[in-house]
Image 1 (cartoon, rainbow, N blue to C red):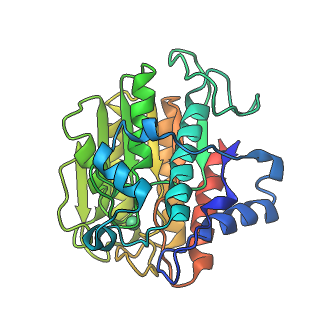
Image 2: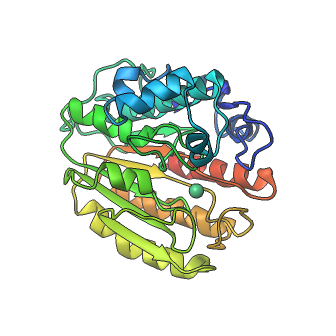
Image 3: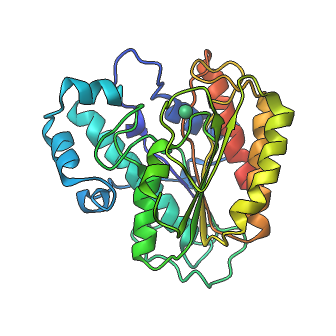
Length: 316
Ligand SMILES: [Zn+2]
């Protein structure tokens, strides 16, 4: 079961953020027989109460009413519209649904997904419990403001919901090319959540709040250095003994990305995914995969990278 909605194709005008990548990844997974149309499940929007587990009442009120100042819009780098707010609220619901699938008692492979199902008893042994969301990874959103195309922090909301249902330890593996500043800030003083970000050091965001483990890489690092650093870091993440891992599989470390400069190849990105999946699977830890960024000059490249991530996740 893969969480996805055609309504993620949000009209934000001419923009470097290709919101039709979600539909394209969905279509390609079907065209290449990786998935059937019946494998996809449509999420419901996250409730405003769930969003308030992370975001301040003032900020949510501004988003709902459209009373955004020019500075707010400039920082968010998205136009405000009711469609934008609802599209991203739905996307938070998608990450939440994937988290429920991953942490549910029964294997997602043997039962129909029900996003409203109760969250799991984490003791129940399931081989490779997995929730995939063709969306999400909005890691630049802070409690009181959005920035960098991220109005809400979907993973943070999902983590707060899992905590409310009794999960003690969660890890976030953020391999988008940009530092996960909002996520690091939100969980800075919560020892239950291990935040790992590996990113390009000299890139947005300028201010990088400290996470549990931050690896800032030099420009043009290429595959080998990147993969060695990741391989070295993953044991530290898993030593936290997470009951659920969220993986932000950003496509923007790619060598032809317009907003990234790490210069990884497609093969390198696939190897990256495999390292993460192997580490999480070997501990039989529930895994939630979200897509995060991707701004390749050719949108087909971004789509191919995200599709490869899903293929590797399903390989099992
Ligand atoms: Zn990014």
